[in-house]
Length: 177
Image (cartoon, rainbow, N blue to C red; front, side):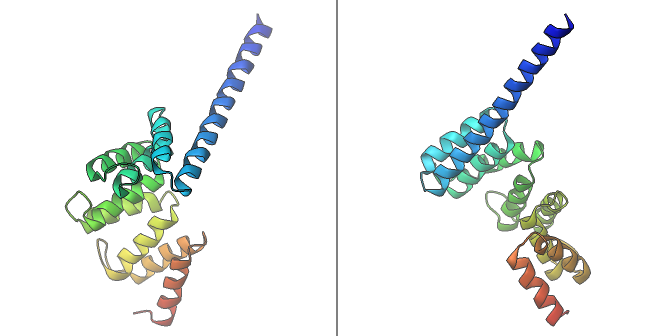
């Protein structure tokens, strides 16, 4: 009995690992289709991933709706997909929601709401959001003007290799006010 249970658990684990590898391979395939400009194929693959509950697939589908790549541009659908991915903990989806509010893409432009979503993503280590939150603090747009906070968020993004954040840090060092 114990051996059978152990074998069954081992079999289920191997299936689970194989499924995880398949999702990773599908994400790679979808990303490759996107990078070569085959947006319809990429959207179909990302949609399949999203339908299986994959947060990155959901985020990509949202991005493609936002940009109108492989489909008609639809900000409402983009926001729905970003929110689904954000609910699953996808930091980049939080960043994109913030970006939609910052730019007024399908929603009322709202710099406070943008900064709130950027903060969620930045606290999850998303370098794009760290840069955006640094800018919000540097210029006082959606967040209190606070050069020390700006420097802290720029540094976090720069530490991840973000060249725009590195340039922003140099600018703050040369002209702190």
